[in-house]
Image (tube, rainbow, N blue to C red; front, top):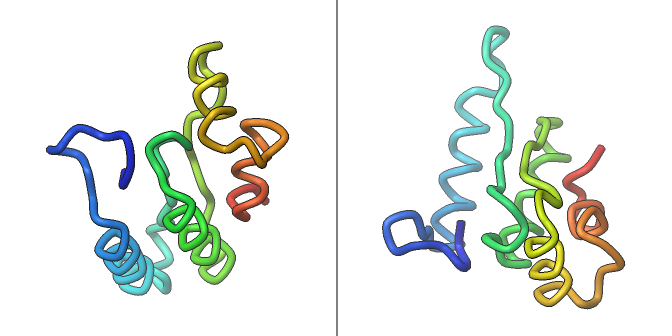
Length: 99
């Protein structure tokens, strides 16, 4: 989470992407472990982090899990944060986090 997160949970975008890539790289060939990318939910992730995670999801062919449209207030919040996207689901689709 690099946006709208409490201080104890907030990550710097660059550090988050670097550590995520290191984790994926470390486990990519392990037959017993399948990493999963987990952006908490769209309001807690910047466009930069969404972009980077989407690229890594494609590059490493790993699944993504997140929260989606759990209540009306959250849906409205996402619409206000991402007015250029047609829906909450479209936020994830646009950043290549659905496949």
